[in-house]
Image (cartoon, rainbow, N blue to C red; front, side, top):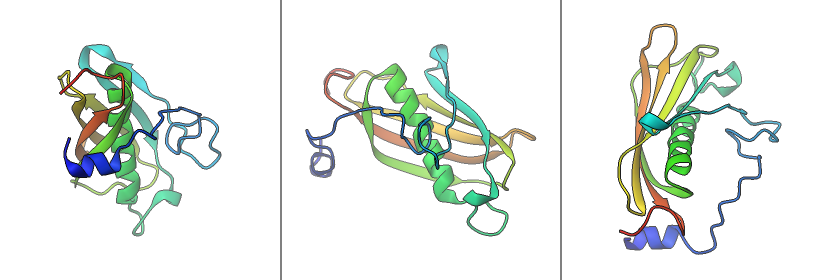
Length: 151
């Protein structure tokens, strides 16, 4: 683990799912409340949704930060479900096409193979109507104590 990783991830992190996550928490009244489906053969997590105008940045364009949040969430779901509790260390996002409000999308995160305490995942957002790629991401995750073995 490098110095930056040691500073950002300490022993005081406790992975507690309290149903108040902005993206998937059922109890957050302002959250997205997505439902996640898992695909064990592909080490994948997936959700489908449409984002309303309240999540736009520029006129008629969904904000890139919201898209990044969805990408991170699906990668995190894949990591947690198939490898154990972990935190995002870094994420690189590439925006390919704009997304308009109320367009149906599929967000899919996939855990890459590996068995150390550091894991890599990837994700993509595609528009349902034409299967156009909206955004992609790659992330590095650090599994928390008890997850995934040693480096």
